[in-house]
Amino acid sequence: MTPRARGLVVAIDGPAGAGKSTVSRRLAARLGYTLVDTGALYRAIALAAREIGISWDDGPGLGSLARRLPLALEPSEEGSRVIVDGEDRSSDIRTPEISQGASIVSQHPDVRVALLDLQRRLGAEGGVVLEGRDIGTVVFPDAEVKVFLTASDEERARRRTAELQARGAAQPIDQVLAEIRERDRRDSTRPIAPLKPARDAITVDTTALDLDAVVETLVGIVRGASSTRSD
Image (cartoon, rainbow, N blue to C red; front, side, top):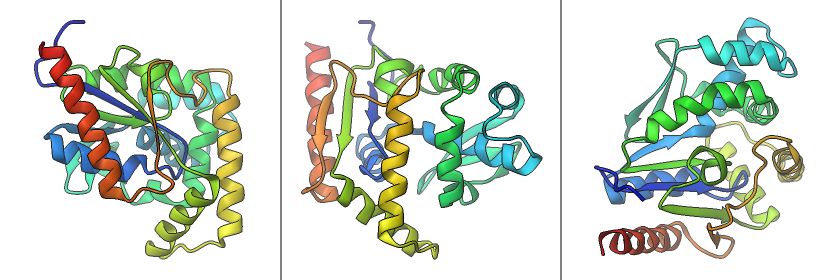
């Protein structure tokens, strides 16, 4: 494998509520790496489609939108800002509605193909933590570090409920649990790039771990991979 100038490519995949976003942000900060939240790109497409009247079921229309919509991720203290057509839409893409929309939008091959090149360009120089659902299997199958984060359905629902409450968008935990299970079903059964661990990914169950413990585990994994590469 050809060494990358600024460090490794770290792929973090997993289902909704497994802790990918928070863990990836903390891990990138610890390593001095760039964070790329690929899920934010699908959220941005869902948001833009809703605002201009393109149905989330219109694959060709969404693909055309994804190819022409100016999208960028910029570093911030929170990890990254999502810039859509020159405007910071980071908060707007984090609603429950857009979360569900992103899961629907991501089913369409036209959208995934349109965003694949952008994701690869964002991580091409190395020294990057990419989080999503198909990073280790499709976007960067040759990533030096592949981690699949998971947790029980109930724990993921508890975390997501607390997150929504903190944003002032509280939902009953039973509703959140049902939405998580439906999203798992869609993500794992879609015909293109389904949610699954890469064959050589390290699975980390975060159900009984706090944030610090998960981050320390991943730091150890990355440092081990760095040592192996430099040998």
